Image (cartoon, rainbow, N blue to C red):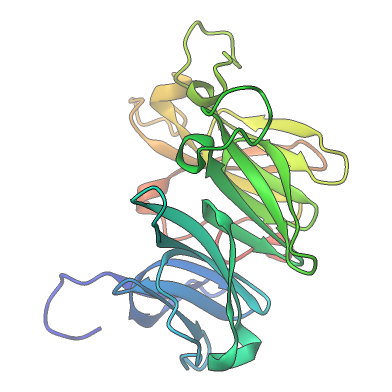
Length: 278
């Protein structure tokens, strides 16, 4: 941002086809869709057009973890729970096309929202909500729920966290510690996996021993910990890296890019099915 120091966190738009980056603003936690990017600066969600760099006129959206898709931006806000004398995370939704006059909708208690079409996927901790959301008699689960924007109804999708929704599919993390299931039969409960949940059928399909899923159409991108899987995935003679991978949900074809997640601004997957967040 040419302010004479190197202490800032900035939001840049990376063009995969040209390999060029454009400075948009100071900020963090960017999410992009259809030429627009939502990000957080000084505790507020702001939105800019990537090509013009023009900032959208929206109400004050105090929060973090924004996700933008079409006309909607969802984000996590901290709300005081007067009854319990504590604060809680809630998911909120705003229609960008309504401008500054549009209302900000409270979705539900939860965090890490992801928007696609008529749905917002988000995670809710039963312990934080003090609710047994899946009716199993405890308050220990972390669950992904779905908010239907048009009707305002909320349904349970699957046990898991950190969702990324695209169309009828939801990519999510499943942590053994949360589910108390040894999914890979290695004798511990410390591993994390990525599944893709099909909303119409309710079926969840295993993708990889990985984390941080990002779904766009039929492709899910994720991060694989070499230490967790016990393999050197980029042939650098260690097992300490976090490696980017992706999978085509329809064909089941998985690709190990061999690229270290912390060092890469973007990586090439077919542009016809890529989302700028991947």
